[in-house]
Image (cartoon, rainbow, N blue to C red; front, side, top):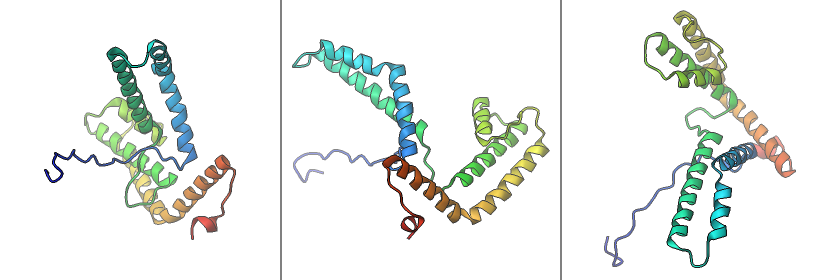
Length: 194
């Protein structure tokens, strides 16, 4: 477009952020992982060292050092943000029981694929099985047993899905209590769910 006498820059659309600042539990988890990442990469030490030798105006080498430090810090923030909170989007209202059952179903499907001879990353498989708290040895477990676990998890999921709104209210109440403990104020269920 040349309407204003120059080419307009392309518009960068905002992407969904993983970090939810309204949940104090999520923020505390972010801070903890961020400080560990900061100390692991020695970013604060590197910034202090480059600040000691810098002068005004900045030299070209000092400027490139600061740019590299900023890139490292941005990469650390993105990595920590991914670790601290998972995004949940779907037709069923999010709550802890629905999330746990969805993870169990996912783990059972992976175990079934593994038993049928599919190639699945062993690290991803063991991580998902541990997250679902199945505690089975995937290589020694029979396919019939896994199918039974899968059916049970699926039936339980549909029962929980029917009461998703009630579980969501409980989840939001717990979230409000966590916020209240953090900021020393309380709110009732009537205030939350008008």
